Length: 105
Image 1 (cartoon, rainbow, N blue to C red):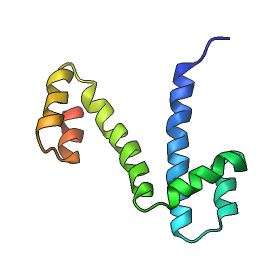
Image 2 (cartoon, rainbow, N blue to C red):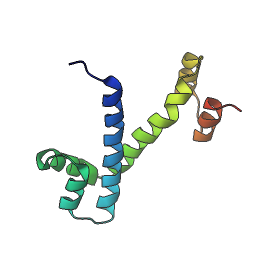
Image 3 (cartoon, rainbow, N blue to C red):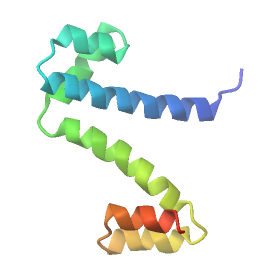
């Protein structure tokens, strides 16, 4: 059976969104058991996730990765992607600039 890579990519993105929401639940003071059920994985899989999410700054990191990917993918998909990538590494760019340039009027 062939792998459906698009399905795998979507599930990976969905998983990161779920982990981000789980981080919010933990910050609200929800019990670990409730958060583990929310993650929709086995308890054995959920325990290390909880440890990670409870560590300072890790919940913010999850959102940095997911939001950053959604912001940068359309911007880097342009025909001048090499120039865009070079700018990303050498210039300070605001998120609004990336959005405007990825979606010109």
